[in-house]
Structures are given as structure tokens and as C-alpha cells.
Image (cartoon, rainbow, N blue to C red; front, top):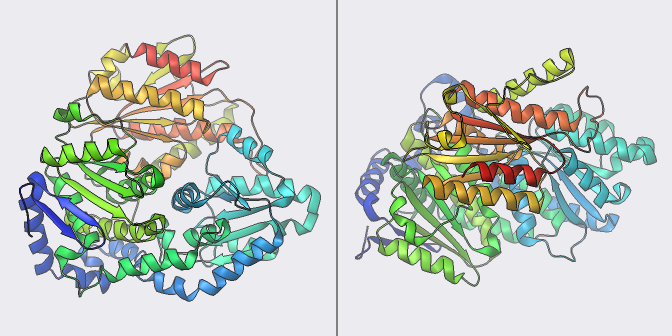
Length: 572
């Protein structure tokens, strides 16, 4: 690798790496990958690159379709274009994607990046079981003039089917047996949803290749059908994906393979103690962090190993003395933000590992989706883990189901004993925190190398997010460790795997609230509000069962923001 005074290597496709202290580690790893013929074996879909056990081999063999799905998608371009025209001709005012995790985060990035105020149909995403969120979507649309996209790989995802049942009943009240005309399904072959969608004569049914896993599924119908509905130039975004694929093939020297090198830096930095991958993203593509966060956390956070993606954290170059467990990835697009540029230059000249990736325009997101998938696969090789499963996600689901069963049998949820009880907030502690009697005691448990994760099973509202971001900043200042933030249950399908399966450096704070403005779920014995609380409580229970340092903060009373404010005051 050719380097200069700050150990810097420039690759193809707008990627520049300043290796800093991980240079020798990455060079050694690069030689090892070459000796293993790793890139050749990747394109041969050799599952033994990651694991040798038969169970893992079977899972991996069923999850590598994304490597070549772009070629299939390009062959489907006419289908997608015809669908785009069909949607436009139908005259829908809105399109609502009903999904979770891998089915929703890439479309959310595309929505925030490409949708203009004048676009029609207006695209909305629903991936929250909070009843306020469901009711807000209902209130903002005319259901009879709305196309609902039911997106679930398994065809059985609880949250997605709950959204679907709710809105199908709404449309059915006016259209009767013709309600299916307002629905599109995206699912795998042979799922219950495929059968039902065909029986109810959905507007269109898209059957996705079964060997494309959820968080890699942007390179399939799960990503491109919503893109078509938004009016995105699907052919162009596929072209960028295809170009990146070509840059990742066997004939490209490993040192010039941007995805592979990104993955090597991820893995070697993390293995050397720099496990906090801190994302700095241009405002024009700021939502990309949502997708990258899920891909990295859920793929690499297992077997007590992992890369911790830090997105949206408060950064200050004068506090860089606390950054010795971080490496940085800077994605720039369009006119560069001067503050971000100044920060990145300071980090580079202070010898922190920094990866700069320059996008020529927003359609280069297509290339980044592919590049980061390659990077994740390569990092998984270096960790010796299976990056295509999610072994700890089920724990929170099981706890949620247990809480809903308890509710059905007892008429209420399991009682939580508050260790700290304020006027508006009640705080329950996990078994590893039984000796704490204040938030000050809890913060003393945060040590160097940790990170604090805020998870909010609350409505996606700007004022609530702003209040939680204030808490996030304060926690970072009080503890001098990186912070993460996510709304539940979205984050369960995003970073939840890392918090339970990754290293024991997660300090978790979970927020729930009293149920307000509830909404019924057709054919279920529980409501959206009860489901959301069961998920938040189940998440707390699953983290506690893993021995993580965790708090459950339940807000009572009328104002969620005031409850969050009381928590902030208790921090001191």
C-alpha cells in the first residue's frame, strides 16, 4: 500500500483511507486474505470462509443471493418500470410501506434522500407499533386513495402483519372484497402472505428470491419496489450497484477493492480495541446511517464480538482524547459541510483511522449499499463469525410473547418494582444493577470502552426525539463514551442483535410510557399500545437475562417530554 505522512491510501470509486495505528494490522490481514484466496471463494459462494459447522453452512448458503441479485434485478427492470407506471396511472395520493428492519430501513433512506415535496404518490413509512404513530398515519391519508405495501420476507412478521390487518380492515369497510386493490405484497416464495395476497387479488405481488437476507435485501424487490413507487430512477441506481459489483470482482487487486478494504479496516480496528465505527454523513444523505447501522450491528454483533456503529453522536474535536476506541467513516455528497470537513481533517492529522468515501451524487447510494455489504462479509471472515444470521434477536421476541401471554392470563403485565420513582418516571433496574440507588450510581458503572444505548418505545415525534437527543448528549458528556439512539421496535430489528450478542460493553436505557390513544389490532387479543409495551419490557428482560447493565424507565402521566425532562434532571 502506498502511503504518505498520515498513512493514506487512495482507491477507486472515491474512497481514501488514512490508516493511522491500524496500518500494519490491515496490511497483514490483506496478505492473509490473498493467501486464502478469499475474494475468489467469496464469488464461488464458499460458506467455509466464515464457518465450518453444518448448521452455519446451511444458513450461509441460503443468504448469499445478494452477491448476484443485481443481475437478476436488471433483468427485472421492465417489470419495475411497468409497475411504476401502473402506480402513477392508478392515481394514488399516498403509498404507505408497512415493514420492519431489513424491509423498511433501505426504503426509508431512499425516501429521505429522493422524495420531493411535490412527488406523488407521497411515500410514508410505518415501522412503529406505537398507536400514536399508527393513528397519525391513518389520519394523514385517505385510505381509499392509498397504496399499502406489505413487505415481509417471512410473511409472518408480527409488526408488519399487525399494520396490514389494521389498514386492510379500514379499506374493507368501504370496498368490501375489492380491498385488495389497494395492497401490494413483497415476500418470499411460499409464505402465508403470498397465498393470502393472491386470494385477495392484491394490486400486485412480488415474489423475492429466497436466498437474499433481510438486511442485504435492498438489492432485491424489497428495496427496488418501494424505490419505483417513489419515482426513483431504478435503472440508474441499479447501474451504480452493478458498477460497484464490478469493482469487487476477482480481477480487481485486493488493495483496490473498496468494499474489501472497508471491511478489513472495520475488523482490524475493532479487534485492536477500536470497535466504535463512528459515521459522519453529509446532510444530503444523512439517513444512510440508519441502514449502515443495521447492517453492521446485526451482521457483526455476535459471539461476544462486533463493530459498534455510532451514528448521530455528538462529536467535538477538542474531546478527541476520548476517541481512542473509535475509527471514523466520512461519507460526503454534494456540497461538503464545513464543520464536518474541519472535524475529519483534524482527525486525520491526529492519526485516527479515517475512511473518506465521496459520492458523486445521491444515486451513488446504490454503490454504497453494495460496497458495505461486501465490507460486512469480509469483516465477518476476519471475526470468524457468521454475518448472515441473527441468533440473539429471538430472545426479545420470546420475552415479548411471554409478556403478551401473561397479559391475556392476568389482565395486566408483570409488575415492575421501581428502584427510583419520580413524579413522572419510574426506573426499574436489571439484576446487575441491584446495588444502585440513583442514576449517579448507574453512571459509575459505565467504564472506558463502553457505549450507552438509548432505546425509546415511544412515538416518532420531533419534540420527543429532541428531548431524547438532549439526554443523549448529556450522557456522552457525563460518561465520555460513545452513545447510540433508536426508536423501538425498529431498533430491535436493527441494532438489537449487537446489544445482546456483541461484547459486554453495552449500557442500555429503555424508555416506555403509559398507553395513550390506543388502537386495536384486528384478529389479535392485544392492542398496538399493549404490543409496544410488551416489546419494550421484553427487550429489558432479554438484556437483563444476558447480564447487561440496563435500566427500564417508564414514563407516567400525560406528557412524555416532561417525563424525559425529569430523567435528564435526575442525571444531575
